Amino acid sequence: MQTLTILGATGSIGLSTLDVAARHPERYVIFALTCHSKIVELAEQCRKFNPRYAVVSDSSKFEELKQLLSIDCPNTEVLSGADGLSCVASRAEVDTVMAAIVGAAGLLPTLEAAQAGKRVLLANKEALVMAGPLFMRAVKEGGATLLPIDSEHNAIFQCLPSDYGIENRGGVRKILLTASGGPFRTIALDALSSVTPKQACAHPNWDMGQKISVDSATMMNKGLELIEACWLFGVTPDEVEVVIHPQSIIHSMVEYIDGSVLAQLGKPDMRTPIAHAMAWPERIDSGVSSLDIVSAARLDFEAPNLERFPCLALAMRAAEIGGSAPTALNAANEVAVDAFLRGQIGFTQIAEIVSTVLNQAENTELSTLEAVQLCDQQAREQARDLIPAIA
Ligand code: NAD
Ligand code: MG
Image 1: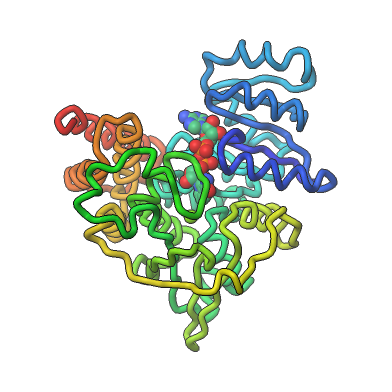
Image 2: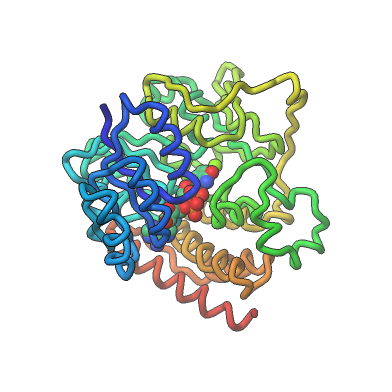
């Protein structure tokens, strides 16, 4: 029996995780579920899974959630705010923490789960991008097991030798990180400035939260994933090649020094990587049906066009610079994507804002949490200052 905390239970990854867990009640017991503000949805999940704790990070909703749970779930204790998240991420009874909060908001509880030596299922890539050295140190010192949920990184993990490590690369030459190219892969370049949030969120292959959907449309998502891959697999940015593969059937590949290239294939359904990480090193049913390779018929590949996807180029630059550059990039991107979703800026202004902030940022090493948070805050302020000027 594994006891599971799901940080961000009401989101796209959270829902898929609960779907997999519900298929295996003999293996998984839900310890805690968290949300930011969707307390009606969270209460519904609590009625079904009867967790020990329900956490709402927006503390103003604490009483309301308590009220919602008082009759149907008397055994579920309600917590709120950062302390509530921290508690359920690190409590001794918890074996596994699914880190599925979106953005920098997920950093603290995810870091705490790592420090507490949990089995950390990492969907929240922003936490690793903004605080790579700190996060990897916490995993090592806490004795945590870090398993990637991002479909590409999960695919890479599956294609690496089982004893792969930074000292023992097992003949790995490079990583081929695949990307769908998102909804705007072929749209006319001059039409990009007027695309709407709705168009940007309509991903051709994946059904995801709004922020990652916009990141996929700009390909900032692939840039964040490049940085994520460097930390997870101990490689340098030049050892990762980004390849566009519009069908999203191959989820990434690993090339070896003998010329072999191993790939992981499957339907684009996050329950596959989630079930893989939940059960690893075993395998369980995820609810995903067979891939029909004959009707898929063809797999296409192309190099990304950096003129179309300037956010990918910016992230590649931040990955090369290292230090505080990925932290600033991530923070500026979160602010710009939020402004785009609110209709305050156009789609192409996301890259303009991130570029300006990245150019302004001083490059320093961020070896403490305080330094990471300060850099994140400064980059957010710089990005916010650019919004009224552009809008
Ligand atoms: P989502 O927007 O659907 O869900 C986000 C979750 O985080 C929700 O439960 C929400 O309540 C919670 N949350 C939001 N703001 C918060 C805050 N300030 N404090 C605490 N909790 C907060 O997002 P998603 O698509 O599920 O993505 C979650 C993470 O997983 C992201 O980092 C994303 O990049 C990553 N990821 C998602 C997918 C996917 O298919 N959806 C694939 C790969 C990686
Ligand atoms: Mg991904």
